Length: 336
Image 1 (cartoon, rainbow, N blue to C red):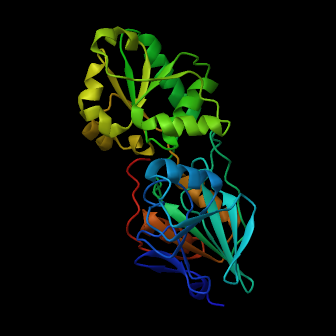
Image 2 (cartoon, one colour; image 1 turned 180 degrees about the vertical axis):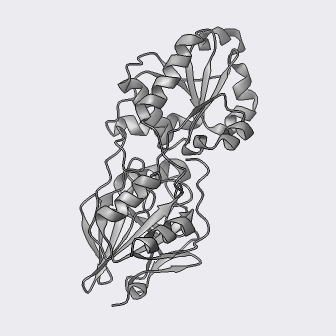
Image 3 (cartoon, helix red, strand yellow; image 1 turned 90 degrees about the vertical axis):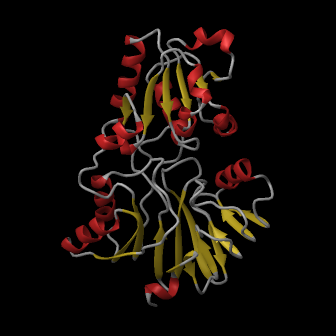
């Protein structure tokens, strides 16, 4: 069968005509298969949602228990038949519960990777390559300029700064789902045993990670108590970047602004955000990881979505791999 007869881009998202379902739709639909819990991929309002148990739990935490009319859990490695189409779920390495979704019919298999990374992450299952005819890849950092350094080196920069300025608070901006928990876990692996203070918006998700066996160590809320500001001297505080511009950030003594993101590779972005200590930590692949993944999987065709699509399509063409941009709108990459 033609690849487009099995899966095709539409204004609502990737659609499987024979299975009559969408993958990560950007508008409410009858049946949605969700790769992971980030808000640009997992939206409320669908009649029926199928996802990993962790992604369903995360959607419930973020949107409330009535985020969908009905839900169905699918574990890694599980195969489900949907209207005659075989669907299976495979780790994506992006955040807790993130999955690649393999769609197969009549000997043709297409893998929608969602967002993924290839680096070890102590907070989620590692990416597993899946043989397929078509690999659908993201392209968030699909330019040769993007090369993510070693995670341990970035965490070492944060710890060195905290030791150098024990009288100052280090405010680390990080996305509330996935990035915040990964920064905390990496700090613990580096030997940091002190209490880490977190913004209230992260509490439920951190609690959920702990309930799933992810070790985060001692955490405490970074609550508003002007009478006790000195307790934050020398502390590491993690919060969403949006909170740095409001009253919440002004309670800390002489804070050092840090931000954990792959975008910290771009100096102009660092200056625009007023970041003093950029931490290049991404939950997406860099250029080499993207191209190495395509080589490893060896698909007949690559479909590229949300990001620097043209550059990755051109690389595929130069390497005799058929490729096309999907040009699906509605997916964001600013947080990573």
